[in-house]
Image (cartoon, rainbow, N blue to C red; front, side, top):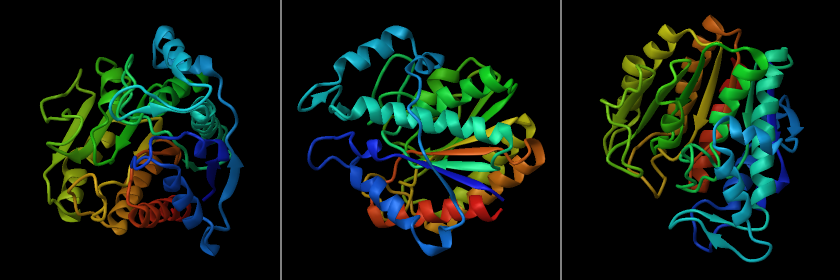
Length: 308
């Protein structure tokens, strides 16, 4: 099974204030883990520079223009209490965009079965017209729209196992039955969304977990809510918001997952991709703020993508 790894050094140049959990070392930890000899089979690609017009597939043009105008020539600006931008943030966002759209193109062209995009800044908290939660643009939402526009995908499923609910992705696709958004997350926790009764037009499936829940609870949520929803949806493509902050070591939340849980979830998603969409899976890095837990979990996730 061919797995593509998209990466680019420009994603290290998006900077946050000192002490901020979303830091370049996160990406360095993932990249270092994927340099292990067992990952020599990965097909590594530098992320191309994305076309900024594609942001408008998920965001109003005015929002894209506003965020771009906020990028400073020097120093750093605060967009909100959690979200900042630095001189390198615009190229980092474009490289993240380029990775996601190139990965979608590759799996539809049959050049690979699946792909992992080791990118930052993350994206799943960015709503239609609001940058928030460390996120400037909702890269995975753009990837879904790109698959529909460029490749004629009729149904795209987004599975999000970040510990924080992907409020932005839910916001963008709230009333769009052509995109399924299925999420496990801790609740209550930032951003406060993701309740069971948030269902959109039947295309939103939330499976909230409680502080202290472990891999058994996570797997039960997958088996009873996430996987049946994806199976019934019969997607043409599965996208993964791959946040690894549900790991027991993570400082920003209270779930108790380990790397094997992410390996298991990835395998279950791949089973459905084989059944419904010719193995097409594209995974984008989201959260994960303990460097050891992040590295272990991302490595388990990518190893499962590549091993089938």
